[in-house]
Image (cartoon, rainbow, N blue to C red):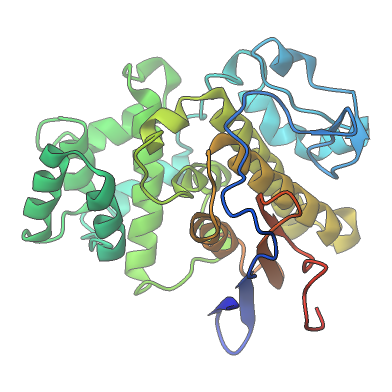
Length: 336
């Protein structure tokens, strides 16, 4: 059976469509295991921008075991403005840049915004959580919603009233505490959630989040899982590859938004970069299935619904692997 998900933006404009296509392969669990190596095609690696085969890679990132390939200096320049912040020694472990002043100001402004629990997400966490975590979540559900301020203070064991200081510290790299990366992810996810809450759970416009908030939000692209846990996965080199590809995707989207001529960054480039992102997620997550890919695809498309109309197809390829593509599979019975 074909599962179709459609989201609609402001007015009557269609934001995106997501199709989960029934597989034709008799192999239902023939998944690749997680790997730390780059994806290869015909013995060559792919340009992270356009997907063409190439053997030219970012040498600085290679020293940190990150394989990021570019077919030409022109394609490297398309993403360099943002990639340079996570290049070389920051490539793995992947180090998110500090909060921008805009992010700091918005967090402080939205600090008292209550964040309603997503019960679907809570249920998913409870299915894979340890008993003590289940008890903690069960107690949370019965309590009034926490504000952004309370959530950040409690999640990091900080005293009440320290929210402003914590957020200000995340603006300055020299003031970062040891668990800085967890705090940055938490702060940026809280900022996104608060903005959505203010809009009554509507989709955010692309320009409503800073660049690194967009990239950080994709760290929550997967539903809660047990083995490996999301926390373990985020520390892996495989997930660092996913984060670098997210930087590529949002660099292209940002350039397309800013360009007077959309031909500067053709939509096809963005399609190829996003498909490679999902390929990397599939390599990072053993036994990726259609529901998990659908969850991830919905999160990805929600971040860019107002940039262009997107239509994604989730299906199994001839070897039984789940893939996410902008073109329908050969067995697709309808016109694309």
